[in-house]
Image (spheres, rainbow, N blue to C red):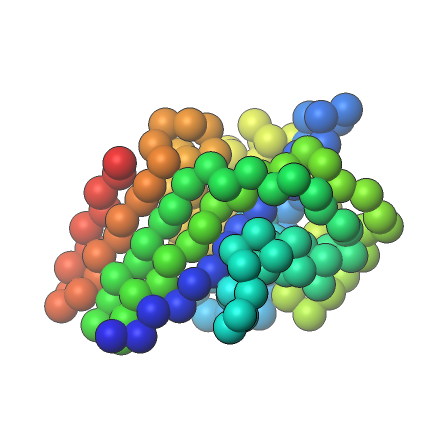
Length: 149
């Protein structure tokens, strides 16, 4: 079974009560509003990967990312594991347009009620809001089962 490790980071501006939102257009199944993130590369720590992905997608330098949860997707092709981070510690000049889509700041409560978000975002928000620490989503053999922990 193939296992892919990924990350996501909610970059939160305490002064404005806004989060950095990516309107992702690049990948099938991940389109819609989401937070920056990507894959963990071989030989890279999880923290280093989320810092690198944030820089690549936003041009911001994030610091002190805090791991807040995990989401796992199981399919007939393999297993994807997403490490969910958040930070309020960042600096740099935001690049609003990139290869993934457009970036913009949005009120966090407004974001939660906006659609279309990427397919897993509503479940990931349950982690960010402290309702759960783990989401397990099983797609094998035509199933569509989600378990929260």
